[in-house]
Length: 86
Image (cartoon, rainbow, N blue to C red; front, side, top):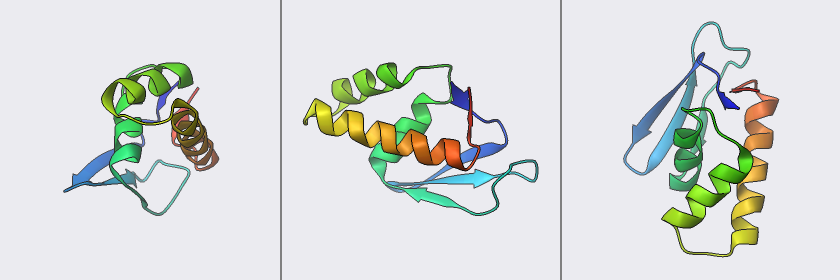
């Protein structure tokens, strides 16, 4: 999976915005924290859910189960708005 090219990442401090272009199926902004930004950054290249979880665990300390859940929820929302190409 990979981030749909009709969506652009924009960082403002520790916040990340996912901005749809005119060709995107979603019209609005998705605003996220540093973790969401990290997940979105991973999606700039072809990756899998497990690879994202692994990269998140390498970058941050925390419960791997919680990380898995955060990644899963984030990917669900990104799929819902059409921001991921499978």
